[in-house]
Image (tube, rainbow, N blue to C red):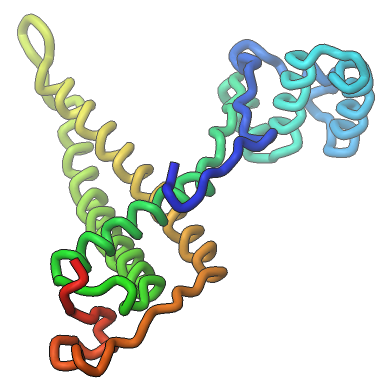
Length: 234
């Protein structure tokens, strides 16, 4: 967790403990496959009265009911279940804690860069420098994303082309593994883009009161427009 913010766990952060595999949302809610949204909502309200924990019901059954309701009320999730017969559980949203972690990491990076320049942190606009660092890293991720999107089709063209007369197909495994890793890298880039976007939004509430350099030190300072004032603070 970031040194700048320690977030207490929230009730909605909990990952449902119920297993999605094997659940039939139509059977759980007691509706037909042709049920419309209003029928699904009505069935959920009725079933919720039976198993809601606040009404003496079973927490796991209510989680299963909620998961089934969320699946059928969402057209995309419902179509996915109808096609595959499996409920795709929603991953927990870690964007907020990721954003706090990114703020802490970028803050420490900026301080390290200031130290390398022999700059005085108290005489620099740290919020502006952090924003510049976020923008720089977003650009770098954009370049990485473009490179991955170039490589993935090339590796996809190799899929299924390697065979071996005996033993394990290491080259085939290498291709499949590389494609999987590149796909995961794309997801990671998207994750940190979302985190940085939220981090910048959170930073809108912050200001940093930085000191003006003393006249006696003026000859040792770079103009403030660069974001850095060099001195002998470190």
